[in-house]
Structures are given as structure tokens and as C-alpha cells.
Image (cartoon, rainbow, N blue to C red; front, side):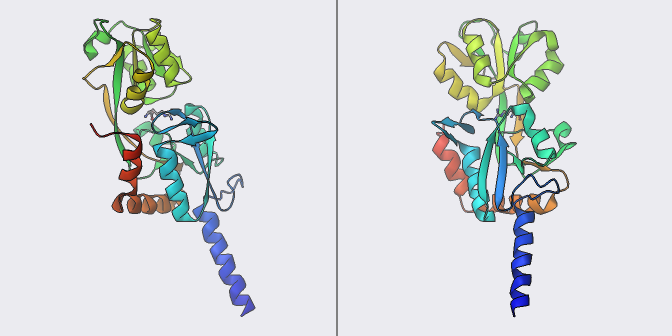
Length: 249
Ligand code: ARG
């Protein structure tokens, strides 16, 4: 009997280790789901006092709860998130992260949980009214984001100013240091309410989808995350979290 209990405990432990992303490097802890993010991206992740809150933080907490894990959030530079996941220091990368072919070479992605757009913010009355007007202009982006990647490719490095935080790019725009900012639509909406005289162009720059990044080949964790996401979508939890942070238009 004792042997059987030990065996069961052992099996349960192994399941939990695998489930919470215990890696060979031993950096991820048993029973803990470590999420790497960049908490400069309202309403998905941002600081509220000493806490990190937002849509991603809440979805991750709900996933962790389903997995029986404790969620631990690490706030790092956006372009450090994928390396953190590939090295196994973090179990998941969740940061309003767009699924791209290039990123899929380095990480696996969960099913998508949000639809997003890259939009263009300009100063009111700037004369920039369409994407075509961006030619020859200086565009601010958050370093390493899809806004950075796409705009650098299209307009050339000389026309791109990279900032550590999206908000810094928007501030530079409101100070007249740059002509436009390319950034995700929901943070864009938040940032223009915090800086006067800015508008978002109707014409979107790119359509995207967000998903959770997981170490390549960690199918045990990937399956658990996808299963949890599916349940959260089905029972309305995901919609309720989104509705808490984004008012329907
Ligand atoms: N969706 C964009 C991307 O994946 C920007 C994400 C920025 N996220 C953040 N938490 N700063 O590149």
C-alpha cells in the first residue's frame, strides 16, 4: 500500500513538474508557472502600484489556476521575452505577442486568444492622413515589436526611431520629435488619452493575432495551455476578462 501511495505521489509530482514547465535546466520551478512579459502595454499588461495587471496577467492567472500552479510574472524588455522562453527561464511568454512566421522558428505558439491591429498614431492636423503619407517620415516604435519589424522593412532603418517603451514613442510624438508611431490598437487608444492632440488613423497598418509563446517542443505544456485556453473561451471567462479592460465600441 505504501509503495502504491509513493508511486501515485511520484506520478502526480512528475505530472505537475511537466505541467508547470519544469525544464532540464531546472530554472522553472515545480508548481510555478513563470510568465515573461513586458508590462508597458496597457490594457494587456501594465503596472498598478506594485502589481502587474491587465488582460494577459488575468488570463495567465486563470490558466495557472487550472493547472494547479502559482503564477509568477517577470517584467522584462519585450525583445528579451522569446530568449527567456527558449532558455527555459520562463515557461510562457505572454505580452500581447503577435504570432509571426519568424517567431515560430524559435518558439511554439498556443492557439490565439485575441485579434489585434497595428495602427498609426499622428498629431492632429499633421497632414498625415493615410499610410501613403508615411513615406519619408520618421516613425517611432517599441523596440523588437512587429511595428518595429514591419516598419523597418518597409521604410528603412533611417526612418525608424526605436524606444524601450511604446509610451516613450508616443511622448516623443506629442513633443514633435517624430512624425508618427506604429503600435497595437488597444495600447494606442490608451496612450492617446494620456497625451493630448494625437489621433489614430482609420487605415490599419497590419492585422495580427496574439498567442502565448512556449518553448519549442514542450508539447506537454502546450497542450495544457491550449486546453485551459479553450475552457476559458468556452465558459466566458476570457470574454469577461477582456470586457473588464476594454469597453465595447
Ligand atoms: N503585438 C506586438 C508584437 O508582438 C507588440 C507587443 C508588445 N507587447 C508588450 N507587452 N510590450 O510585436
